[in-house]
Length: 286
Ligand code: OGA
Ligand code: MN
Image (cartoon, rainbow, N blue to C red; front, side, top):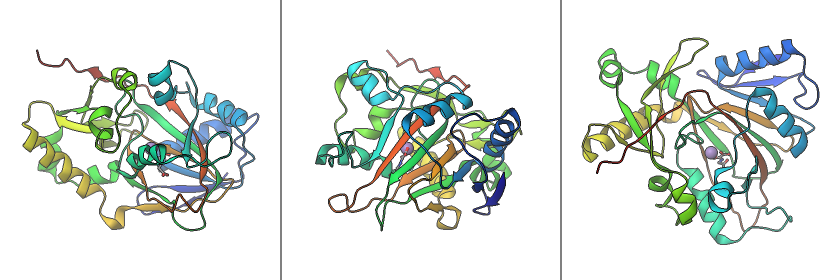
């Protein structure tokens, strides 16, 4: 397994590994270690299809049911499609493209779930020749760069994450889908259980800080977001067909950068692995 770092803070390109098929225990352990160390792993030239991707996803833990389909229809599927190509190969209509523009806000996948996700696994099949990059930043690095006072100030705070809050600014949320995702509460500061490194945990789904006014909440959440997304902290990932990228949602934020969806095709398939830390369900005040 060849590891080549991609950014001063996080990210690595890994070659000499095949993600599909049988993986020996040592390789799997190295992979888990690399997730904890680098937060984002890019594997070029992977021979992938949905079946192989789901098999690999199982190696890392329990696959997460895709919440849009589950919330709207009750059907379980482990895949989300990123991009503008439908299952039948045709381009999507405008509404879905608008829904996906929510992905252009900095977020951590599934931070709005009671048990947020551990990693997302995204495999690229078709990518535009220009645009359509995905940007990543590390909230671990952001946390490290806070002052001691700032760290102390946020140490025991909790944050409400709310999908309907974040996404209804972009497009209406289906009522059944909305009802399936009540707001949840997570600690603002998380600790990686393997290496003990801390990070704050925010993003577009972070609605408010428990015990603070709306104004104070926004000030703190916006300050942390600005601090962690300064331009030199961003890893801008340009996709190539055949790449599989794994990222650690516990400590990274990401966003899509947009592309001319009327002109270019972009098709990527995503699975996610359920995390281990359970948030507390927020009791809405009476
Ligand atoms: C994702 C995501 C944005 C993009 O895959 O979870 O938010 O356009 N992607 O790459
Ligand atoms: Mn995402």
